[in-house]
Image (cartoon, rainbow, N blue to C red):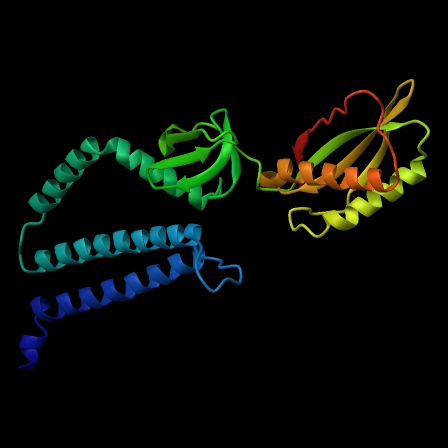
Length: 272
């Protein structure tokens, strides 16, 4: 009885399966640790979190099948089965599948790399291959970007050659404000301070509004420059809100703008 148990054909498959199971559990925990999903205090996973979780499960499945195939080949070898032909067949089959679905595989690998390298996420404002807009969908095969005028670009992940992520860091808006030269700088500071109190109620505004000073001097007006740090996807919205609050403060103080048309210039730049 003891001799039959000690036969390699009996104990080697058991040991092989045990090692395979332990190795799979170890790699699974390693994947979970390295690619841990941050839920950011939310009770439910976001769409992007679910996508990342799906990729983690996909990696675990790939690991499981690879370990299972290796374990089966080892067990067959113990039973005297020539695995050389099986391995060769698997190689040929893999090559055929790879050729047939090479574009799909390229897109899949590119999509995984985009998420793992944190190039961009759903909801980010990006410029991809010269097209700027909000990422409305990030899939394994394609990325969909919606511009501010409603156009949607659908691009294969493997075709993405350049990415500018405008949402990775807060953006700075620089506004040029004309003001009559008979309005003192101190009075303008008070106006900006009043507007700032209202703007701070918006989570999109990251810092207090900063009055940088006089940009240029004209015959009947000064051009002041103001800096506002906001999230990139809200820059146009916060521009309009700022101007509305500024108008309210002007009306309260009966301040009329110079007769020329007010020109608002925006320049956006990322800051660390």
